[in-house]
Length: 184
Image 1 (cartoon, rainbow, N blue to C red):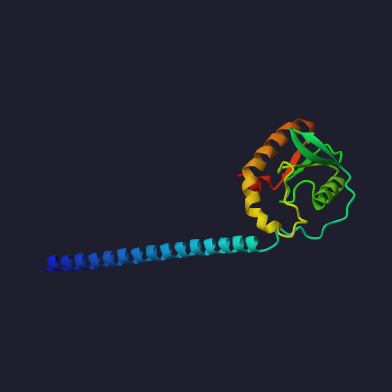
Image 2 (image 1 turned 90 degrees about the horizontal axis):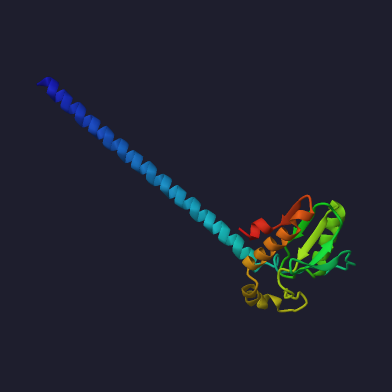
């Protein structure tokens, strides 16, 4: 009888231990869930702040100081797209432009410099079919939402894919700036 009582006590103590252990495990799991949830919220908040900063700042829409530059390349139609072409290299760089398009002098200056310093051929296709945002218009930011509807990123990506397919066989390698970022 003494043995049965001690077994019963051991069983009760074991049951209490299991209950405490389960309770602790549930508490730990709950804490981990709260931490994960907090991290996700923090990341979401951080990303939202970045997006709001970008949309509110002029970093993406400010044409900056308009450069003086005598462009060194020429315009040519490639794959049915008006294109600025500069340089004479065996490798090529294809540039994606900002909202000011392929004819903006700052963009062409950058292309000419890339071509000269890297000894490549640099292409800037007209992703906007002759309809970039004009940086000389004072209220161009107000025009931006409607303009973006007319020129979705998917359309620019389709133009880029067709363009790259057309020039692929003519160059040893092709580097494309910002395409992977924009065209996912």
